[in-house]
Length: 115
Image 1 (cartoon, rainbow, N blue to C red):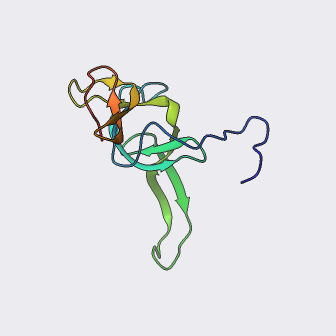
Image 2: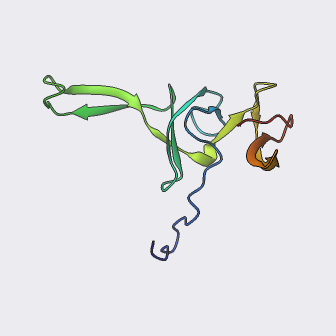
């Protein structure tokens, strides 16, 4: 991997991963919850189920002979989502902790282990 250019991220780690339940904390979708369908650490983005629905114009192809306009989830910046606390159901920050010799994510608000 080469040296990052000015303004680029070089730490490709996210606080959420595929399958996590998250709540959107900023923007026009604020307050909506969903499951992370796709995590894109290189771009610092996530795709959340049912959030940020965009219209995509699709050409006809062998899998879709008609083509047309599809509705699908668009990507959100990872900083705009927070993990849902398993105990309270509200947004929480995440801390990494070693439990039984294994590094796990822990909800800051309740102290519950997420992984």
